[in-house]
Image (cartoon, rainbow, N blue to C red; front, side, top):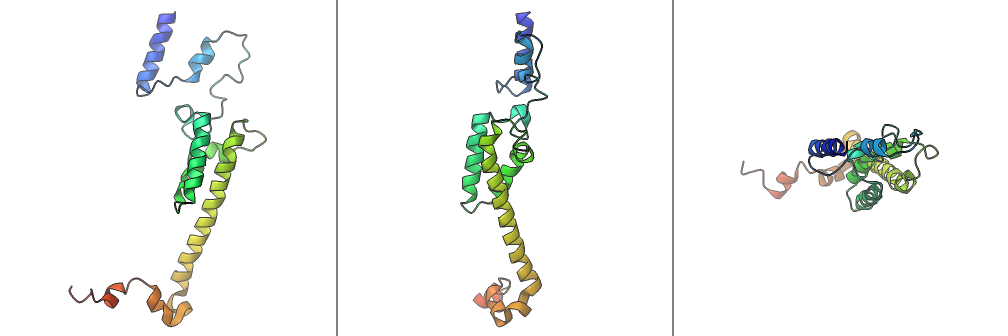
Length: 160
């Protein structure tokens, strides 16, 4: 029996690219115990990342969420969007119904969502002001603000 179980684990490792990861179904199925098992069922387990059991452990998830959040302040706000996407199960779950491990990840993901929303609103409003307003809004200063006449101002357009 044990040889067959080892063979199945080897097959799963091979299927997972040799990463050594084993789905929790095997551990839950081989544990002895009386048949309760609502928490040990992998389909009912809530994973913090979108890639489920193949993703990060809970400790690594906290570290990655924190890194993505902090690096978003280094003028890389798209990392906030990546943080929200990758930890979507944490962002989507309600704090009252989510596992206790999510409570350590949730503040970073929620703040990343807020930061990305603020960034997106500021960027969109800046783009709309320039697209809609243009020369009518800025007047003669518009010629100094736009970049499409940069070649003319530097004398680089004459050689073409």
